[in-house]
Image (cartoon, rainbow, N blue to C red; front, side):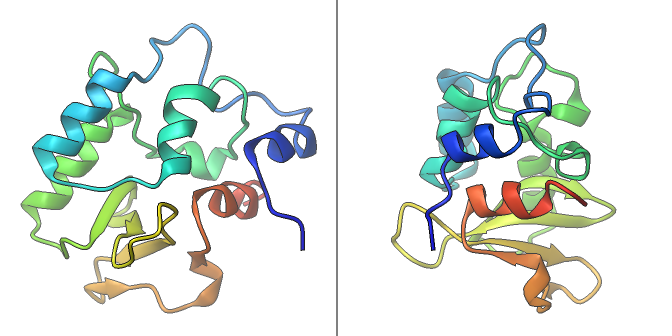
Amino acid sequence: MNKITFESLIKKYAKREPAFPKNWPKPNEFDLNFLIQKYNCKFSKSFIDFQLKYCHLVPMGDFSFEGFGWANNSLDSYLSLEEILKDYKQLEFPDFLTPFRYENGDYWCFDNRNSDPEFPVVIFDHNSFDIEKNPEYNWINFIDWIDKTMDR
């Protein structure tokens, strides 16, 4: 099985628009590092690379884009990674999860329970107060999540 990369996603979905509009202020390292320190969270290497290097190149499905958090504090709150992190922390959900997307009370998160730089992506279901068990909603890593949610 071929490893999925940002470059392969760009080729595979060449006819789709990049995830982040060119006319918006780009996510930046300063804001991302501030959030990591403030909320004591861990993001996968691919997520960091996506935010800082690939957001203007890699497409993201509409489903994925809704509720996605970007590391730029000048964006509106509904686009803010900080808003997602702040809301999650206030709810006192598990510390081993780092959210990056929110929809209808559920959080798409990195499961930080291993030391690998690429964390699995899971959904924390607010109704069951647990990680979604359906394998369809568990992804190997962030790039796998982008690829498999592109057509939803």
